[in-house]
Image 1 (cartoon, rainbow, N blue to C red):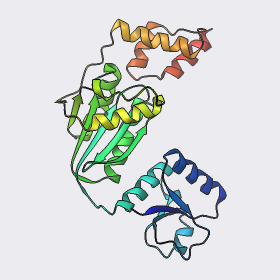
Image 2: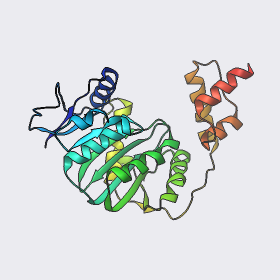
Image 3: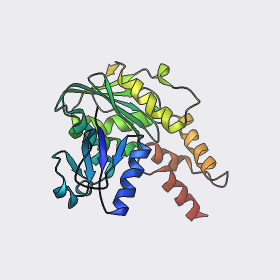
Image 4: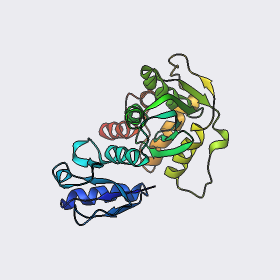
Length: 253
């Protein structure tokens, strides 16, 4: 498979591109000139202005898109040379920072971690554009019930089949970092079948889940603050983030 090329005289843009490529552990070739492009370079990441200097038709103008990550996704898809997949499975490991993985025709295409449950739907919409498919399925782990249900309810309007799968066997080795474990778990979840979701799911937190959110607020503030049960409930329903809840608690003091 060919690799990505990076060409731009914009130092700031160049730095931002490399930061994302290194974070995602993607191979690339830095290009000093728009001429004599190595044969192993399949797609070139550049700016919209400089893309006109490229002889290669396979260029991605980074600054045209709303994020570098999105542009890189499109570049990787171009590298595969595949216009449409037969089946795409999107796995989600639910949690306050969900892991998401995309598997297309038995190939792991991508695995990422999202900042919050509310941002999952935006990532899924992006993947639907980047990875067109004849059939697409969303599979989500059964854990973190309230967070899981919040995510599912946000995805139902997309009208894509959603399955809840048993994620018991998907937890990777503790030797890897939390972020990587969430991404790996999402990849494993994508490969498992489960029960289909037919309608919106209830958001009824138990006492235990409420206390757990309160515990998290204490941990994040090193024991200085504990949000109320009512506020914890709002966090669980996705109406306010835990960080916002803590800040509100601080302002009251």
